Length: 217
Image 1 (cartoon, rainbow, N blue to C red):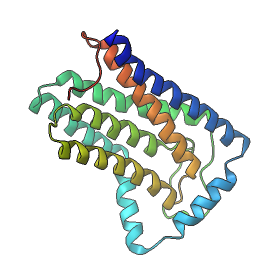
Image 2 (cartoon, helix red, strand yellow):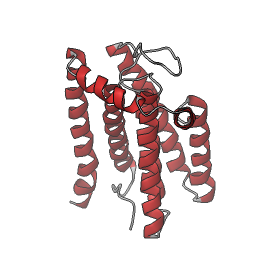
Image 3 (cartoon, rainbow, N blue to C red):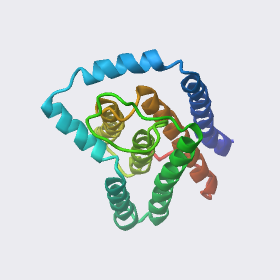
Image 4 (tube, helix red, strand yellow):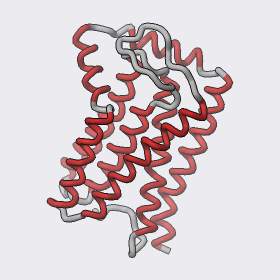
């Protein structure tokens, strides 16, 4: 019974996020998110200042392949060498790699063009869902999940959750601010990333001998 309860929660969360992504994708395909996108773009880009542009460029840089690879490598070393959890380190790297591959696959299906107005930076590729947002949700979500068990204090755990959520939010917002994604791209990236994250946690629980996935208190 404990096994079913522990594994049911991430599976249910995965399915709910997947259902949400499917519904949101339909809205994007039908063009029903245009008003939402334009209003939020106008608001966020209306905050533009030279200092804020530098800050947003920094956070969007953290979602690029090289920084993601470095963070993944450092996390692998932390889990494998310091905490002696090599399996968790490998699992973490696999989740991040899977997120990138899944995002590229979905982008090829929708093939949505990027916004063509007020770009502060210029990049190629398709727009939906945001790869930065999806990778950020997968990386920092899984990072928080795996490190939770190794942090015993309430303050430390609170800081872990806050910093992870802040990184996810700021990386997503930076993509809108810099003009390379619609808000619906970022929202779709979050939903797809959350679905992949919870699916990965569920798979991780299935692979463990004791069948549990919740970090100990």
